[in-house]
Length: 279
Ligand SMILES: Cc1cc2nc3c(=O)[nH]c(=O)nc-3n(C[C@H](O)[C@H](O)[C@H](O)COP(=O)(O)O)c2cc1C
Image 1 (cartoon, rainbow, N blue to C red):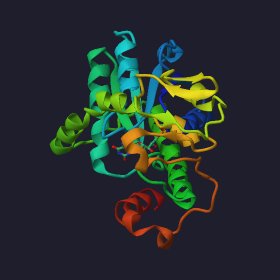
Image 2: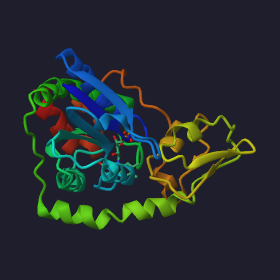
Image 3: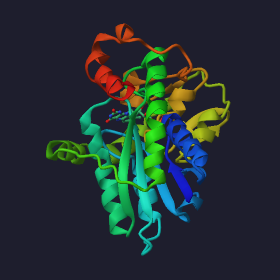
């Protein structure tokens, strides 16, 4: 099969997972291509036998650029199978609801949504996980990817059951779409900005420009956090969310956290998630 991955990923987590899945699928004999979802760029992957759409969960929802991407893809009568791949910072079951809207839109266009794969990866906002936790999350992705790739390879179904309450919370929080656009107008680079242009190059919305060697933000932020996360001098402030800013890459190759290293906050749901897949 020709499998096309279309991926929206602000800080690289979802892209990392999708590249790994694509590698596993290639090992099973499929041809895979992985393309980023970038505003204004045509996406070549819609012309394939199976489509995989990857995105991070934002406020228990699918991010706006991914919804726009789906709205733009052509309707089909070929019943092309689609898998959604979502990553989130927390193993909260409310996150499952993020798949509902993309699934609905894709079905309305004639695509067969075979399922949604949901992986926990480290937070890129709110708080910073330790590298040891990030490494354990990544280890779990690698454990799961083998059987998940087999599932895609055989076009088997994998449903994420989501409760009506989760669906309702997700709908209420879809206010994030206009909300983050508004909040994004207040993003700014402080005097530490060295004008390297990394944020401008990384922004999937084309929302950042360098003006006189200083990053300036426009009016179409999707809240992916790539700018603040990758800034080499931590110069980017994210408006009213600034106390939640996370800066700097995770070291996924660090020694993985043992159960005893997991902080009190993460002990419940994260350990349950790890144990479910590690055993
Ligand atoms: C604006 C925003 C909202 C988020 N909302 C959630 C959320 O509702 N639930 C959650 O578990 N993680 C949430 N996260 C964390 C991301 O889903 C998680 O870190 C993801 O792996 C980032 O993927 P990326 O690097 O591909 O962008 C949010 C992140 C951002 C930037």
